[in-house]
Figure (tube, rainbow, N blue to C red):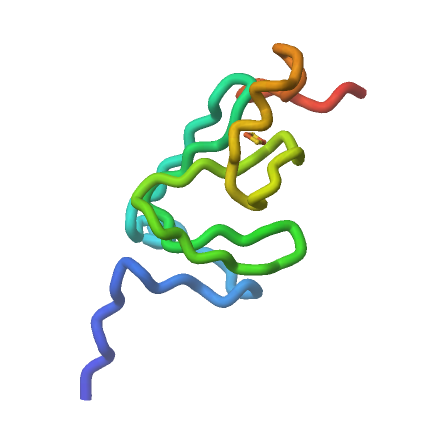
Length: 98
Ligand code: FES
């Protein structure tokens, strides 16, 4: 009896140690782009998990996820961030102030 082939979609249980050369993370490509002073553009994801753990299915190949907290369509961006002063949102790679 042979072991079923491992697919690229398999992921270890959260308490599993990763081994060198493990192919975790080579599943479907998901790309996240940070828009300056705007949302996160997420491409290739089938859902987005909100901060309270709710899984919201995506309906498009690319979705805009609000990161300003002012949208009326959470978790999706509704353009309200455009009313905020430039520089209100942290930029890519920024770190919280110490
Ligand atoms: S980032 Fe667009 S409404 Fe929040």
